Image 1 (tube, helix red, strand yellow):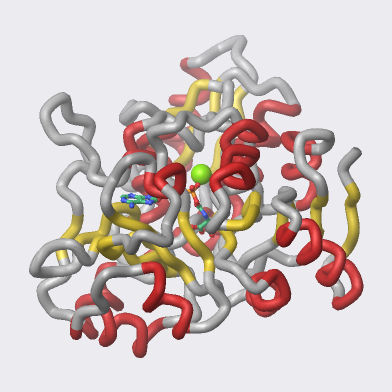
Image 2 (spheres, rainbow, N blue to C red; image 1 turned 135 degrees about the vertical axis):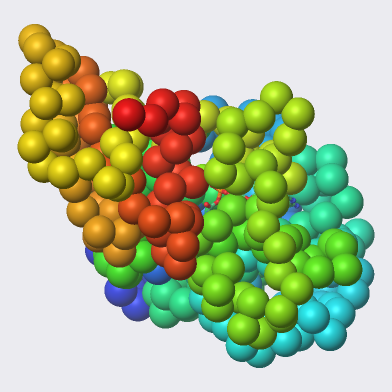
Length: 318
Ligand code: TXA
Ligand code: MG
């Protein structure tokens, strides 16, 4: 049985007890819902992989409530890391460090690194604080479906598969955190998000982008294992329409698909970040065959949106 409760101080206490006892709890963050468990216990983390049907080669993010928790999880906090932490934490930003012995192998999926994030969401931080351990949490969807940004997305995927679901606002972002590797000389964005390349470069000039992020390639292998999967996709076929098309041209494209049931999405980058996953889930629920999404400029938050969108479309552009 899954307990479902609105996030408040009482439900947080219950949820924290569950985490301490190596159970699983879904909780909102400022990006998407997370499926959490005690990040220092392998058996607890196994339950996350089982509940999601997640491949074992995809590592998990450890969520912390206080910056001091970083030291024991990592081998070294470099000057560059400190700059980013001071500039952004708590934030929708995940940083990758060389891992310490304390981090179970199941978290890092065999890599010698660990991803850590301090969420901006107060309720999420309170849960971590009450649990007294870092909380491992991937997005709270079944592997292969879009990340959940609304409580009903979580219950559709995970009711009956986890111990507790805390419902509440996921905040304003709607797209997963920016993942940045600190293993090389300069920070490298492995997954674009709300903390943008432009924002990171203001703090550390040399910040780079994983070259595999915006194009389909046989030779470029994404540095974040999770980015190689075709997530974020609805069952309907997704096409990206060039940002230069006019409404009349879009209407012609739609009429070319004739008898198909088509959802057309034409929104700005901010609104797409917030709503894209909800649109994808709605497309499945309402039985659309095709989803056409008008492209946005791949800059600022638009970079994260286009990354998710092109993956969902399998790089099909019209
Ligand atoms: O906003 C978010 O980041 C949400 C909320 C719940 O915090 N979490 C989330 O987790 O999106 P998940 O597991 O769905 O995505 C984590 C991504 C995956 O692509 C994974 O491969 C990558 O981060 N990752 C985790 N640890 C890594 C590591 N040590 N090295 C490289 N990539 C890593
Ligand atoms: Mg995910």
